[in-house]
Length: 243
Ligand SMILES: Nc1ncnc2c1ncn2[C@@H]1O[C@H](COP(=O)(O)OP(=O)(O)OP(=O)(O)O)[C@@H](O)[C@H]1O
Image 1 (cartoon, rainbow, N blue to C red):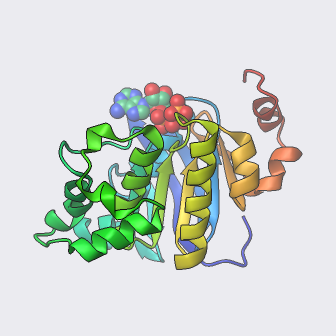
Image 2: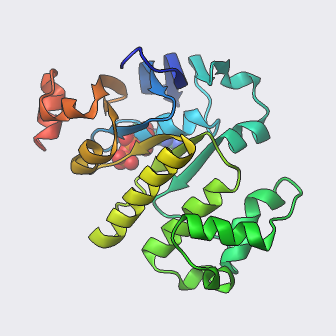
């Protein structure tokens, strides 16, 4: 990974295991501040696990994780969740209105979300104000993902983690969400770490890529590395061949 950029998230020799089974091994590297980095690799490589380490949902067995140069252990959980937002493929919603869903991150901090602010958030993600009173269960997949992203923005996070947020969407919705994430990245300088199975997406949207295989980071660099991987395992992965 280029040394020209300040790391937003830095991993230093991180190990993580479940029931003595190593899931992540020797993870060292940085996600540059203000950039979009995609995380690719075969199923079970450890991508989601790595993402969950970035916001404290999981803790490493050993090694260090640093968010904006500060050890993740030094953050209050609330402060960490505000700094590092996350959106998931399933875009989980609580039952009730879109407004209720947008207000949730504030409510968890004992605060209220102003209706004007909720409207602004919807505008940011390309939805009009009529959506505020819609029931979350009546949203399409693309709309649901937009609300999920808007809800992430409530806390104005400096870093957003995305776990396959477009993989269940039709191509048009996928393009809309991609454009939305690029806009958020450019407008607010938000660091984006994006797990995707879509290598075309990694090439076009992400400036940088980490390739993970079997719990290890095998290659990192500009996304164009996917066009000509140096590593044989990565070459096989990119060609869709089994490891
Ligand atoms: N809580 C857990 N208990 C047992 N095994 C787990 C647990 N969490 C993760 N694993 C295992 O760790 C490995 C990595 O899982 P992870 O979900 O991080 O991979 P991934 O690269 O995100 O995969 P996918 O692309 O399929 O989502 C898998 O073998 C998974 O079964």
